Length: 209
Image 1 (tube, rainbow, N blue to C red):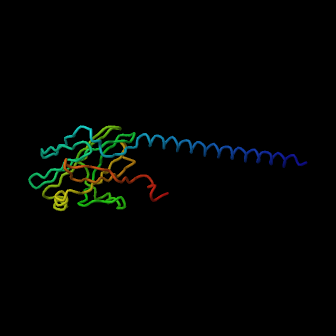
Image 2: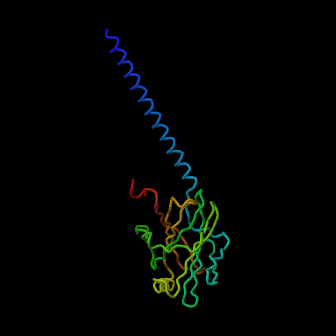
Image 3: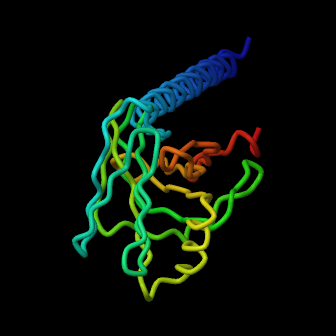
C-alpha cells in the first residue's frame, strides 16, 4: 500500500465531497433568495380595474382650473371651450400601492387581441397619483388646442365610444402594468370596463408560456 497515494486520494475525495456540499448549499440559498424576492415583489404588485357602481364619485382637477367628476364604475368626459377632459374611476385590487405614470387614449374600441400602445407614446402625468391597495382613485387626461389627436378624440366622444390604456407600477417604479379600459356612453353617463392587462417588466404569460 502506497500510503502517500492513499492519503492524497482520501484528501481529494474529501475535497470533492465538500465542493458538492457547498454547491448544493449555494443553490439552495440562491433558490431561497429568489423565492423571498418573489414574495416581496408580489406583496408590492398593484392591479387596477374599474371601481364599483356604489363607490363614491371622484373629482379630478386640472391645472387650468377645470374640475370634472368621475362616478363609480364610470368616467367623466367633458368638452369645454374646444378642449376635452377625461377622468376615470379606478380601484386597486392588488396588494401594493399603484403609482400612475400615464396613459394613452384610442379614438376607437380596442379588442383584447390588440396590442398596447408603444411606451414612448404614452402621455405622462404632470403629477404623481397614488392608489393604495383596496382603495379607489382616478386617472385623468386633457386634450387642448395644441395637443396631437384632439380632433380624433373629440370625434370618438361624439360617437360615444373609445378606449384608454393606463400605465402604472409599484412604489419603487417597477412591475409596470398597462391596463386597457373600454369607455362607452349610456343613458346614465359614461361606463368603464377593464378588458386586458399587459406586464411590462415581467414575462407575459400569454407569450412566454
